[in-house]
Image 1 (cartoon, rainbow, N blue to C red):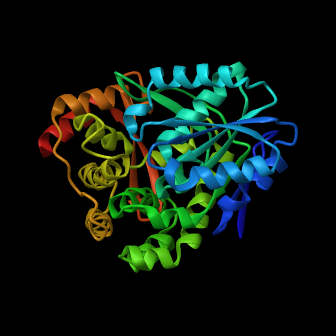
Image 2 (image 1 turned 180 degrees about the vertical axis):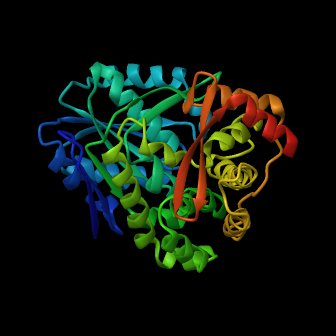
Length: 357
């Protein structure tokens, strides 16, 4: 078992990583929610048949009265209408301020359930039980919860930290290869922005089989990096912005596919490669670096380029949460293992992208 503590003032919580941990969900959650009577468990239509039965049994053995809320799998469920359905369902269940919400699933479930927990009754306790690689290494840690709007992704949300994060690497065994690769884009990102040795560790294992053999170490390394960043900058006004490497342009690719054609990780993969190429054009990034990142992504069948219209680039950059007035802060690399914020006029970034189309 590996444990990391996110030591935020007054809101400290543990990230626990262990194979077979789902069977211990009840006792683990009971330890952090000793007064809760009811627990609303939110999952999706893919995860429910795989893991909800065992998790619900464990929680009920720990004395929780549970109700399962199943949303359709996919990004389309992360919307205000689905959020409102959860609110009403929680009220029908009789949830009170001393009860809690558990998210069992991937990033969509975690974001949706977390925002529901943050806003129902002005906030109830929240537990993350992520079952995808992307959720385990990224979205379940750090407290960002949100839903999408017609104008773009994650535009209505909050910072709301969980009381506990339970990661069972066994859940990754049921992932399709493309879903595993989707999460690996975020894993590669951590090596790019923070730890060159970790990047080399990953590139020396260019297959799912090799990566899975060391998956607990990978989860621990990624969560350790994110924990350090979140403790220093919980509200995303400084250091935490480096976690958005590949995301500014990645959001444009997600938008270009109307959030259906390209999953988040696939879009981030292409976004990292595009950011590296842009960094070279701006004189920030060494010329050999885009090739190294592209090779790492391509080894896992992740895209290194995605076609995108200027309209979609403009829409994504205009809505980017790293924008400030006419400027945007683009996260670039000056070497593997070190990210640097680069502030520039949005119109200049758009002009640069137009030249490369």
